[in-house]
Length: 157
Image 1 (tube, helix red, strand yellow):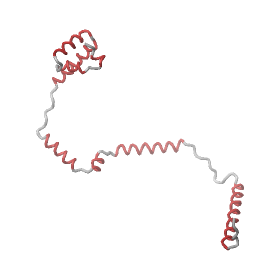
Image 2 (image 1 turned 90 degrees about the vertical axis):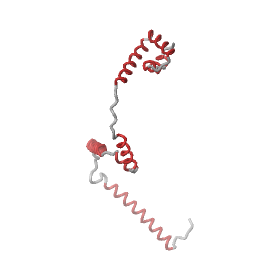
Image 3 (image 1 turned 180 degrees about the vertical axis):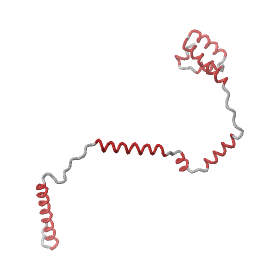
């Protein structure tokens, strides 16, 4: 027999430990396990699991279990999609998220350097010259448009 661990067929060992394996295959697993320490350890561990499961007893089901189950199903069936969606919502994560965002914003404001802006521009004369030139160009454009509008400029361009 090929080693079930090496061939990836450890399910055979689980079935053997639970007693569900066919007798002829169980004999070959026993022969192999006698020479393979890996399979022996898996069989021992699985036997412990099977023993623990056989000793375990389930809790008895209460007498009104079915009634309570169907009552909860009916209650849930009457709720809309939005009600089911909001039922799982909790304000605690939302408040935590808002606090984290506020903290990050405060840290960003405190860490970033303030912009250095003076109340008056450094070169105020240059700005006035540019503004004067722009005003002069705009006034010339207005004069030209008034001439075209009055009919004085009917020349083709």
